[in-house]
Amino acid sequence: MRLPDADPAQSPELAAAYAEFLRTRGIVSNVMKSFAHAPAGLSAIVDLGSYCRYGTDLTEKQKELVILITGRGVAYAWHHHAPLGLKAGLSEAQLQALRDGRVPEGLEEAESALCAYVFAYAALKGVPADVFARMRAAFSPRRITDVNITAGYYLCLASSIIAMEVQPDAPQVLDAATHFHATAERG
Image (cartoon, rainbow, N blue to C red; front, side, top):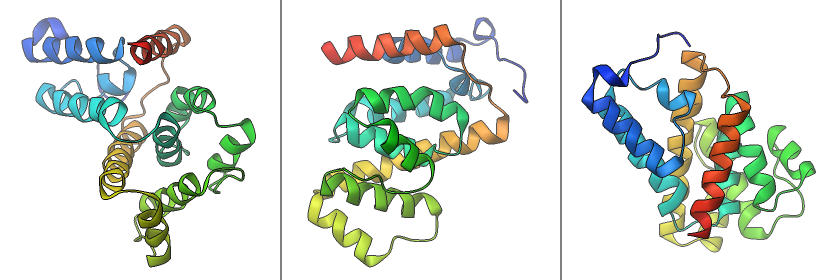
């Protein structure tokens, strides 16, 4: 990390933000710690992240496709989300295609359209009309909006991970996050 760790014992706002992240995710990951010097900003990111993970109208597979595409060049993001992508039904070959910047074979049309859209969205050069037309044919306005919000959130995280040189979380942190996510899904 390029900045020293912030101490939640020195900031009630940061302690509250960490508590909320622990409640909604089970861990405080290194990427969230990278925002800790701005507790109100961290809280906003936690709230938006909670919406992206648990409040959208997207399936788990659709969310993971968005996340994996926006984080495909970031080892930190890939280590967190490739296992979740497999769990959501993606194959190793499909993960490799995503990592290589290609729409994977074997997806349903809606998922294929979503991938093409997010690749264009994340390139920050505009979304071609034909790509957007495929999204409109496959998704409701709500789901398209959820894709935009989720992709924007994960682009923010990816660029911050790179800029702040956020180090990967320890394996036990990843295991705890995966366990927490699975428990949250079961209710």
